[in-house]
Amino acid sequence: MASAGSRIPFWIIALLAALCLAVLSWSVFGFVLPFREMTRTWMLEMRVAGYDATDIDAMRGVLARTPAARDLLFGMHAGPELVFPALLTALIIAVLVGLQPGGVYFGRPMHPLLIGAFYAVPFVYAVADYAENMLTTNVFGDGVAWSFAAAALPWASSLKFTALAISLIVIIRFAIVRLMPPGDQGAP
Image (cartoon, rainbow, N blue to C red; front, side, top):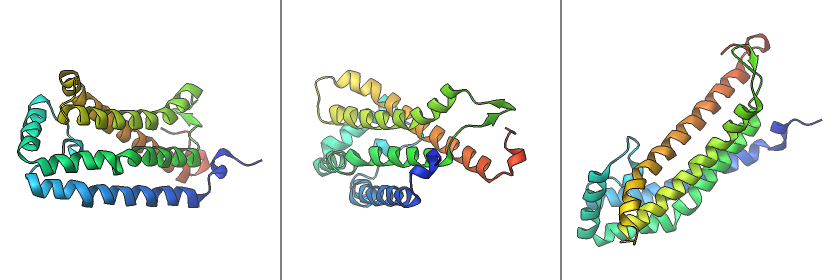
């Protein structure tokens, strides 16, 4: 009987990784770097350390003074940012399925809900990334719910990067466990 990990061929994971890299390159070289060159500041979405209302207000000013930068921001959301979160989520899920999270943790079997949570976190990333994109479009596109969007935008960004970090930590943890000798796999 084939295991769950054997149902996703390596070439599919490699293809997803290549597509993620291609779309990320499109985003960075087509939008992020030209935006940076034009405005001398980074897009809010690129600030891994987060941002607050002051940064949002400053970005509104930058975009008001530089309409071409505003067009780049909206173009990124209408182009690579439409597909990148879905592609990255698919890649993370494919890798997780290949690694087959499970087994024991601190000498006890992992609860099925914990294993389910490992698979849910990449979807949290995707929802948070799409939410950040919609909120950004609302805030900088003079949407009707500007105050709500401005308040929610930093939270969506933080949730996005947190879920992505957790997903990467889980992948690294289970990759290390897979490389360990069978007798050592019950260790934390």
